[in-house]
Amino acid sequence: ALALVGILWTRIRPQWGKQFTVQPSVMTQAVLKCSENELRIELQGDFHHKNLDELRRIFRQAAAASGDVILEFANIGSFDRSFLGLILMLEKHTSIRGAKLFVEGANVRQLKVLKANDMRYPSYKPVRRKQANVGENSLRSHGSVGRV
Image (cartoon, rainbow, N blue to C red):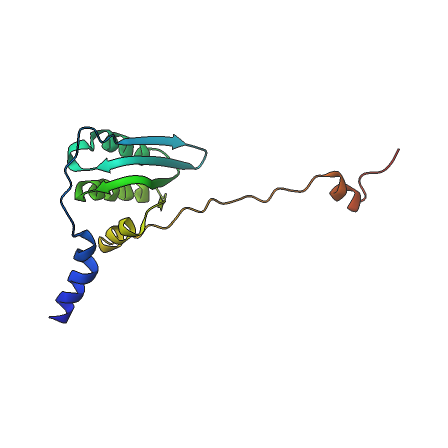
């Protein structure tokens, strides 16, 4: 009985809440931005089963492309299980091609829902390449710059 209560508390409780209905005035948008080794999908609005066609198309493009995929959650209002299913589809295809899926900008409630569904995606931390200091001072310290 305690195990059942634990499951209810950790897995189902974060998903409780009112049922959302999609208003026609609520605009959803997904923008795919590509760079050398990453794909960023900026999400905006409420994502529910009735308005996922465009997002499904963008996720398919991202799944077929190369590079890691970053989902930007900062402007998401609400989402349902169909949206989570699309993320799982995207995760499957990115892992098949050896890439990773990251989530950025998710609020505490969104993170709890993802965690309750065993969707623990790390935040994206870009790899910064060290740039050689080629200024005049560094060249002088190595003896390559002289006065004429």
